[in-house]
Image 1 (cartoon, rainbow, N blue to C red):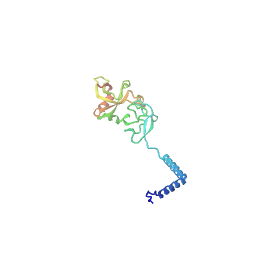
Image 2: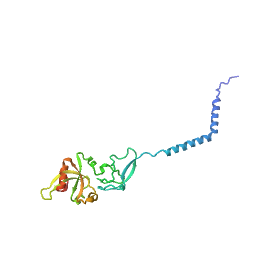
Image 3: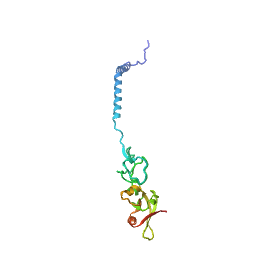
Image 4: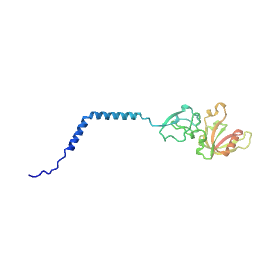
Amino acid sequence: MPLDLSPVTPRRPVRAARAVRRAVLARRRLLAAVLVAVAVAAGLQASADPPPRRDIVLVAARDLPSGAALAADDLVEVGFAPGTAPAGLAEAPVGRVLAAPLRAGEAVTDVRLVGPALTRAHPGLVAVPVRLPDAGMVALLRVGDVVDLVAADPQGGEPAVVAHAVPVLAVPDHTADAGAQGLGGRLVVVGALEADVPVLADAAVRHYLSFSYSG
């Protein structure tokens, strides 16, 4: 009689697999409950996480003109993601005067306000406020204009250029400029060489200042 040499399939792994299957089926409700509990816990943990950090930045609540004195209701707070806020943000801008127009939603930076930062784009110059006696003439000026300041002696004499090719940095609002003192004329902030400052100050007191557009 010939021998049966075909391989014998082991039964032990089959029995083990069946035992595992029976155990899983017997505890399927418990396993389902555990999975639900884990999902609920994960959801609660996610909802309990704090919101992402934001850097608070003051921006214009609406379009604001050059020369306006900023009031509290001119500004609103907006959250910026860390590292995305504009550079040079102005500290305590309420009460400061705008050197240039500000669009709604635009951040208030130091170069938008009357102050030392105005000359950042003009190395070697300093910001000098100069009062011109003719307010109507000043109304023709715009930030960025380049002018020659001319002094004329009211008692006669030849007019002279006291500052050549100075950039107009700011033209403050006429109402805010006059204030309670009722000053005449209108204030203009120009960028001038430091050596020209004493000459400008003297001319503003003793002469009639006007300007011509620099060629």
